[in-house]
Length: 338
Image (cartoon, rainbow, N blue to C red):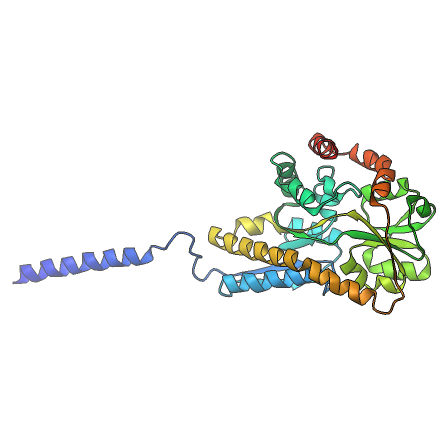
């Protein structure tokens, strides 16, 4: 009898151990239980602009899809510094995620990403195609890793950049001698100076004051920035130049991303993909709202211009800027322009 009980006990123990082993197996892609993340995300853009709304959507979706395990602390309005400062913070890991507009091409993928040069691209899909190109797109992403220790995790469409001024500027000739505020992007200085402008580098936070006091006469930005930063109060003419069809670039610190579980990387990527898709879908509607506010009191004049004439006039500056780019970028643009 004792022998029978011993056999039964042994079988029970074996079955129990087998059951425990089976219980520990998880379906592929299941997030690690209990693993939590608290990430810092920074943007120098103003609260209420398109990219700010997209950033808030990213925070919401990351929290939702991770069941609260991926928390993103989102800092807008340059509270953690300018874009240039955010790039350095991203590189060192002081912040985990950064949003960069044209400074991505100028400061991160320098001399490789040609989408930062004004008056080249005519369609936003053409701009996006650069990042999907097997040669140039790969070179841009490699530059992000080597220069700023980051991965490009998302792209968000922007409304076109427009020239604003204290007077009507209908043709490139009208720009001669006009003091134009530009950010610290050398290619922009090159191109705008080639059109006859007198470029002055002014930080975005000081642009309104510079226009108000006459330090500069004009500036250029998308309509959401023109609205949220009240540029239309001091520049009553908006030229429909659409000289740059740009993208917002969301970048994540490489160490932060590499230290996440693969399933959680997928969750975070899903949040970015869906938030950016939402922003793209809402862009036209949001832009219409900004335009409505800017034009509400009838004091602002929108000036239609011959965009082809402006592009042709900018060609000398474009060629000068492109001379400093990689062979991959030069070949791509030569093929694009035909």
